[in-house]
Image (cartoon, rainbow, N blue to C red; front, side):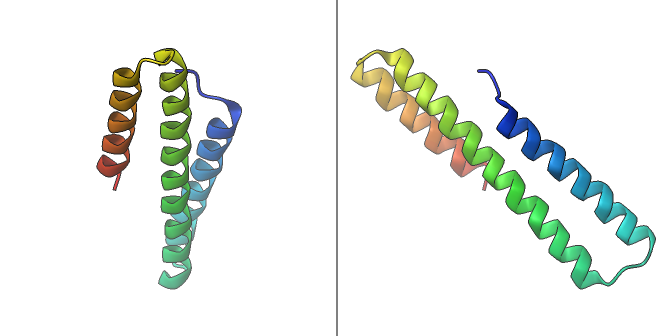
Length: 86
């Protein structure tokens, strides 16, 4: 699977947020602010997972070329990945 720039940009944004959170903690910032930023990162991770799974599912369905068993298997695998990520 190839990962497009949307996913890579999301990861870069989260990386920056995590560095910011570390800095906030080192500076002794309020825990509410830290938790708010951690929640934003978690939400970003969940969105990235959803994006990757959905793009992979589209690729798998296209590759199945009408093979219903393969399509069903791809959908089941996508659901397993989403459940595992929770």
